[in-house]
Picture (cartoon, chains in turn blue, yellow):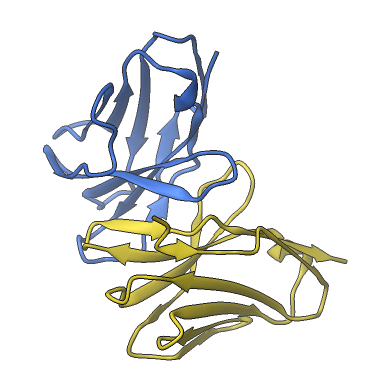
Amino acid sequence: NAGVMQNPRHLVRRRGQEARLRCSPMKGHSHVYWYRQLPEEGLKFMVYLQKENIIDESGMPKERFSAEFPKEGPSILRIQQVVRGDSAAYFCASSPRRDDYEQYFGPGTRLTVT
Amino acid sequence: DQQVKQNSPSLSVQEGRISILNCDYTNSMFDYFLWYKKYPAEGPTFLISISSIKDKNEDGRFTVFLNKSAKHLSLHIVPSQPGDSAVYFCAAPSGGFKTIFGAGTRLFVKA
């Protein structure tokens, strides 16, 4: 049973470019969460999605960031016009049920903005 | 506003001894807590959890203690092994959807 998959593992973008981060949840999991980890900090919640629905995006910056989880395919976290402050590790997690507190994390995507 | 705090950035312990990792929280509405373990270049993995109706939960070498009046929990690892060297995050679900993480404590277990 494959775990949570994230790609790419490393992504380098120049300032002003777009970054697309992909996450495939574990089989049978329909709840996806995105977190961001800045250096020397804990993981910060960004957004919670179910298939075709954004449930809670209270942790997402108001501009340039968006997320989706289409009916088919992986969840996508999209960052437009990246800036140096977006450099971080972005982790995706999934769970089988909404009230399942334990989340299964992917290996993360490390975004570097030059 | 840090609702979950891990005040020790790092901890060094000799193999075979006990490791104690601490965590404090400010939100009295938290009713469930989790510890995650993270190796470099990997995502966090769930280690152990505790509900607020309990004050202790044990799983093999890992025990979590909860002191609700002090808003404090701790993770005990005994005996510590070199493979336990990792970053440990304390976490609490908030509002049903999001999980609030502490900043983590890096544990070094020396052989």
